[in-house]
Image 1 (tube, rainbow, N blue to C red):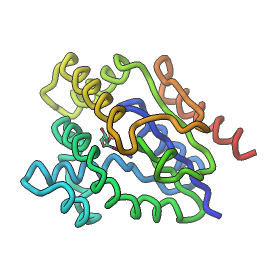
Image 2: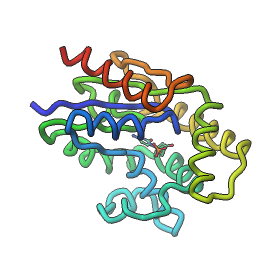
Image 3: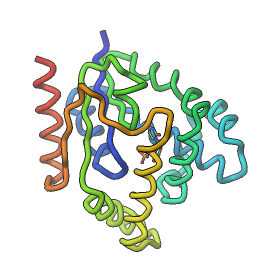
Length: 202
Ligand code: DC
């Protein structure tokens, strides 16, 4: 049986970094499911209809270099509210999780909706200020024209929309282990995740 690890949490909590490191540690495949919603959002920004964009999404759409911008992130959060967009992306994520020897999927609804029977579920979070500060530094390093206040507003707006939507809202699964990375370095967050997984693996 393939081993599945789900890592959910709000924007910029460190899910991506932790997921990549965990996948490398265990020799598992990694899927950043936010990229799927970002790719749909990017298509909508160029005039596509959201449901059709999700239904016709191609692997090459995930290679668009603009997917990491704030504009695309906001649009991703908006298209993610649409139930038909979410259902169009479900099979791809479940098929990814079915591969051996194991996989790590990060997102918002992986432990609750996509892989409710996952072997280990983590909920990685941090205060809004910590997350905005990290995202601000990351965007600045990439040369983006952003302010720290703007990034904080953006993160809060996205979290609120992701948490309050009717379909598959952002919420920790009942059986998830929560890791608050607010006061942690990347190394500490990765170590905490690996320890939580090893504890569950037995
Ligand atoms: O993880 P991210 O910041 O790249 O995600 C971008 C947006 O996509 C996020 O604000 C909400 C949506 N999303 C989702 O609804 N469900 C997921 N599993 C992953 C992302």
